[in-house]
Length: 109
Length: 114
Image: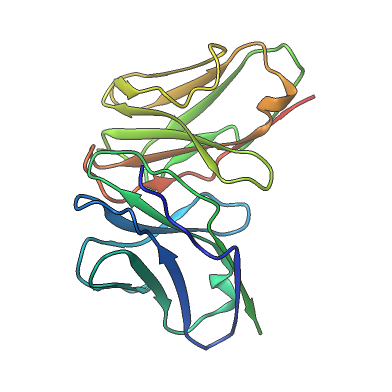
């Protein structure tokens, strides 16, 4: 599996945007970029995924670099409920999700 | 059901005993995954089912671990002769199919081996 690199932790203030980076320099053409998050004492929750184009949904936006070697998950207005571990994962269709260490996001009131 | 359901939510057992953990996936989801998460650690893949077959068992840590899925729905993860290092949260997830891009996770079973 191609690997991703994320910062161990990040902090944000409530109601401000948050940009969570992910590097994946060995990404292959068939790898989708997935983001999941895990709130305390819960199972992971799907956030967003994309292949080449930027993606938006009600939870977040995913900005993918033109060379696809990096991506950024954007939370437009952080809330206290967004405090979680965010995982950036490369996945080919039909394969399993392989979780790394993720980024622990702290949201300050 | 509305989501992935796992039972029990908590299980305390004695070293050497066998345990069974159950997962009810979302209705219609053909793919089912088991993961485990030790305290403060990331998620570790255990096994993947497509229908009733398990094309990927590569994550099972030892032959004490086994899993089955019947009727393409409910799955049971069995741990025989439990050891203290088996203590973890065991998470189940399901998706629409092998190419399903969204996995839906249950809340997990917290297993404590004394």
